[in-house]
Amino acid sequence: MIGFAIFIIILGVLFIVNGFSLGVLTTVMFNFLSLWPVILIFIGLGILSSIKGLRWIKWISMGLSVIFVLMLFFNPFSPTPNAFINRDSYDYGYYKDSIKETVDGSAGEISIIFETGSIAIDILTDDTLSEPEIVGSHNIDSGKLAVVNEGKIITFATDDFHSMLQLNKRISLKLPAKYSYYIQIKSGVVDLRTDDMHNSIKRIKADCGVINCVSSFGRIEEPVILNMKAGISNIKLNVEKESTYRMDRSGGINSTHIYNLKEDRLNPDMDIRLNSGILVFEMQPSM
Image 1: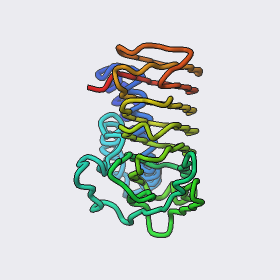
Image 2: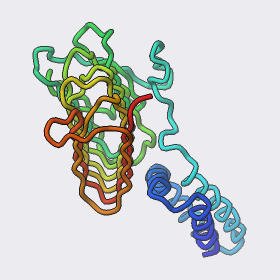
Image 3: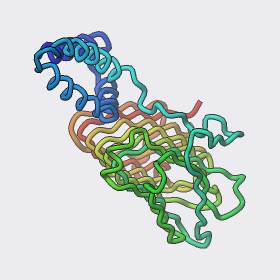
């Protein structure tokens, strides 16, 4: 009980210090969903500390409570490295296995589907890829990632039980920019990063419990549809300054900021549809 009381006190103090905002709340929720196995450790320590002669363990539990609360506020969403930080040197060093999937270049639109309990996804469109192949890498345990390639539909999936056991799973993909793509995500928790300077990604649809999305778009010649449904959403979009948008949103609590962009309800470049219980949304012109 002492450890739990300290946990609540520190949690309250940090909310006051950082300011109780939707941004802080989403940070805490994302980190809690990533770090939830620590709760099992607390339960185990609580059981041990009730045994005579092991009462000292409660002090360990109290110390871990402090560390856990601090990590909820200050641990980054994605502690694993981003494969595309160095665009000229695609580093597979962190990852366990490479990905190379042939796509049907004659298809009007290629669907890429992710079905997993929790996942971090990096997607980059690349105009230097001449072959009809999606390349990339992942860090998911050997044999635990199922890839079904139907030419114009490629599905990446993990079972729910394994998703709970392995934390910080990540898939990084490079897509040939000369094709059009429909990205679909069905996940409990997803951290999505996309970089599309070629207007290759035409649609992104996500149905998740929690989503953190940072997406960058170049000059938009054909409309892009962004359709996201989640319990908690933290979304940041960077678009060209000439881009127009239409946004329809529904749900509960939301904080929306759109900077220096023109709304066009009839023919928008970005057609944004959001349904979220808690939503933090920001869209701004690229620097």
